[in-house]
Image 1: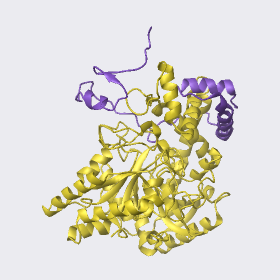
Image 2: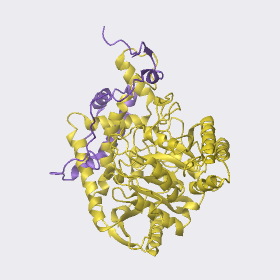
Image 3: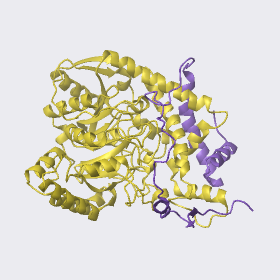
Image 4: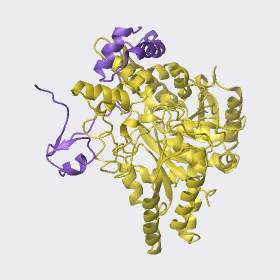
Length: 483
Length: 95
């Protein structure tokens, strides 16, 4: 059962081949037996899952099933789940039981989905390797000496190890797409404002987006249908109709224009990945697409720009963690300042503290113009590059990451080296655009991803392109050895 | 622009994060690596470019200033470190 796609499981439930209770128990057993190899889950919600499965079976029996009714999903531990521990992989929230559900969770509940549990991640979503979690690193199912990527490393590993048919993730600088690429799965970051951020613990408010992490583009479409939509509780949510993302999956790609940014194929890209990407592009040509080289001239500024904007916004968002209303509090605070400074010293890990300091510095008097305001101007230049490119092409393609999964501990000594992992994904967040990563090959026995970037609101086109590629190739069907 | 020990102390105070004295040199060194990377931005001319705060240049929606929520103080305070009589408790602020 666990080797089926979500779409196949949905059909199976509808046909009565198995019940949601059987399906959920099957995944719970697998998690129990196998997750110690990967550490992909922080919390497994066994009883709640079986309750939800039972209700889902009743709904289907009454003829009230919809595609996700009874389907088990894992959720990144960044989405508030009412009365269920939500830690953001931080000591600061180790004891946090949210009094409410994130809108995304509410939507899955209303769709009748089953929640298997909360997946591991980099602390407060800050990282590209899932090595900063308070609960220990996640291992890549393809090679357990290697990282799964981050920050949605737990979700990626769980889906790759078939410990969940699908999972939710969040993406601020690549945190859905990069782990999807390193774990050989499909991951989509929607257009900014497509998916509600209410109840999604904030890292960088102008960059964060929640999205699906699945085995196929079709499965991602099924999840995106549920996750998307205007939410009055999120003041940055955009009021725009949600299409049925499955409806256009089988559209013909004849005449689609693909742009390959020359800046994404330069130094620093593993030559084997480059070859895999070129092979993938040839598949698209055989599907009727045309390809041309384009330029995104400000590409090199994306990482510096992001590492001002994101930490600045994070320093503001994380100022709420003060030991007063919820979460960690230091022992025996001597006075108010001691309460704040020691709670935050003890509750946050090193990378989180580092980014808070960078962000505070960039926003401080005397540096605001040189850093934050400058970065906001660069951000506009980066978005303009894409706007101009989309006048010439329909979709931009390139590698998702510069290398396949690296070894645990390999990049933890130098933050800047780690930051360069996101070199191809970061600009997409700055521009607010949708981005999809799909499996496109194996290098040294480890997966690599093809990234597709679209103009605002073109998720349907990206999923269509991803689905068509997955009809003529089988990279997405490869599973890690031993799975 | 490089930071020194005194700068770290000032930034740490602004951020209300305690950094142990023994850790300050390491923190300063890492921060300087990051700042050196960020400084690449200074090479680019951005005269007459409007800053972009939101990727759609959207403004946040406003709503009428009327009460729409229910008082859920009990539920919210159930998870607080220290409460009494509906108040969150902190160390004494005013002598």
